[in-house]
Length: 208
Length: 258
Image (cartoon, rainbow over all chains, first blue to last red; front, side, top):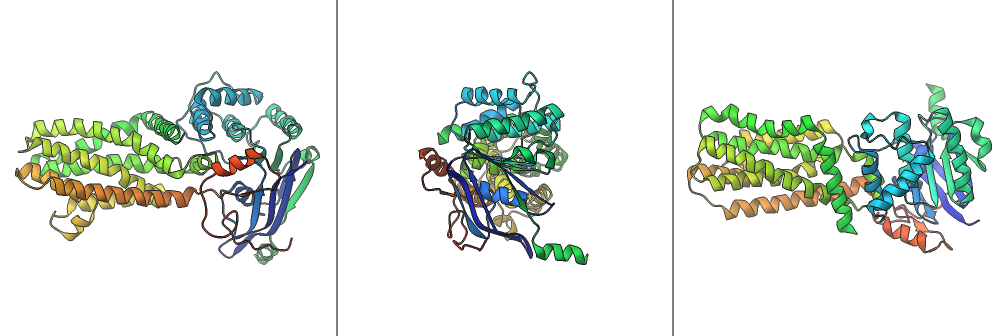
């Protein structure tokens, strides 16, 4: 399988704090990589750099296709409905209104989303919002999926269902990176990459 | 395709604002309150009421930028251009501002009976229109709501508080419309000059908003891996926001040891 995401020598610091120091990451098509590490190790920073949302200080990112990014905190519009979101994000990806809603509903049904509810997102539960967040990442059928703890707020059934979907995405040849702290599920990924906090920061914590 | 993306952006920002019923009521009530509170002090109420329209409209524009900040970069990632997002807001808020200014002008014309009511209506409309790029520029430049609100109150407040012939007044974005409002009371005064003045100030504000918003929501365009198909190249092209200089993600092409 061909490489879909290749991060080489990625460095990032915020002020004096080194977050990432020459990090490499390669993900092939049809591979699921679990990205783990302690709090502040730079997992979200690396995901944001790979998605293009954050600029690295040095290093390069190369991709083999479209990226779908599911952030840890869903950036949704409080007073728009599910369909509004699907149409808006779908249009950005070049889809028509009907196509966006049709494809979005199909994705949401897979996660047990209550499609009969026409509420605006501020009236939805945290888990339901997260399902919409995930569906938006998948809407344009990306070949690379960057999922930053995408199951936050999911109930038990949806959580299990999510990992089943990962298997489906793998079979469809997608390159998937999942930030996770769920060690019990690491058996379901092909490879685990652990990001360690930079020694300079560990030293500072020890002093404190 | 760009036109469709702009239209969707306008539609969604419209839906978002129209569902904020209390905010809509305040949008109308705020300039009216300002005007009615100063109506007893003579015809000067027209100028202060007209300029106070800026509080409402620029506030709406400011919050349309700030409330969507968490989603903006993701929208760019999925294919929007920063300028399309800005233009979408402008296309919704511009007509809304004109509708509000028409109702407000009618009320002020009936109550205050200015010498040249049509110039007053023009002045209020120009205040309303100028407020949109002003609110967009402030919203794009400031980090959070508090800072934006303070800038907005400061600028419009100073415009209201200073005499029209002062340098401070002339430097501010609502100087042109205020001249129109004053001349509607005096019965004489230039019209074309304040209009041009406001137009160029508004254009500068839009350019500033464009620069700030591009800087804030830019998404790096990564290099395509060798052997990747056309789909990858299309995806790369769609992710348009570019960083200047350096490597694929705008960074120096330095390789670190793994």
